[in-house]
Image (cartoon, rainbow, N blue to C red; front, top):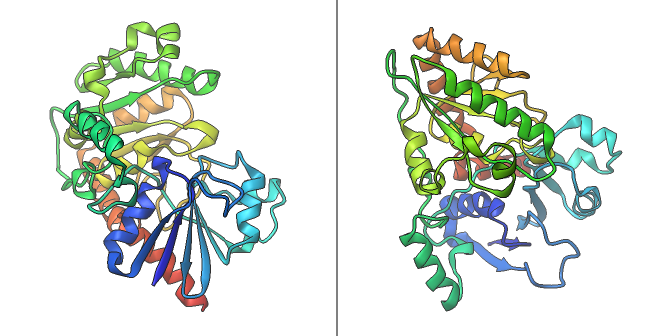
Length: 328
């Protein structure tokens, strides 16, 4: 029996729970330790007891809590980190870093019987209301809700970049605002994008705000599935955002700001995505894909393959357990 301890109720953990449920729910026991004193740190971590070994799944955006990372590194046999960087490991002089492995892209995905979808009766009423209003409800977003079959397109190319702004994050905000403004000026494509209605958006770029109806997750995922090229930028703490995992799950051609974190497998610039550091480079990459339908299609297919081999929740968990089993 595999014991799975949930150390917080952050949605970042949904992918790990979903993976274990899909892989073998009958062999799993789930424990909600988010409010207990058994562990000193309650953040985006899942602790798993498997075959006499302790596994940690670290779903943090980056290395913003080094003391937490070091604690769980010291108290685990295998440590799988979403935002993995050899450079950051050495910079922080982490001990027992040989136990750490890259986990891969994170996105909010759920499944029937999901541990975090067992609320009390008050939360259940609220959840039903959220479903009616098409708001976040992890029960709705199963893996199949993202998956699409790659299509070959030469006309009516749809490009997606829907994003949000953050308080105090000038570099992130400036890049996102600049990209949206330039993408809106393009002709010859159908651009779907804008900025979610938040305080920072109203202050910095009110003219780019899109209606809430366009940013609720049910509508967004449905729209994303219909698009051909999806654009991603660096997230908080240098993270690779949820959108990128969603793009890969949906087999999209991707243009993405240069990634500072490592993922498993051969996910590479030029094959799975085109990278950029400036707005101009992003627009050039977009032009390249639009003018080369075969390249766009091959990228979609490469991302479908990567999803099936590394990112689908059950496959992601199976790959981590292979690492554990090979070392036992």
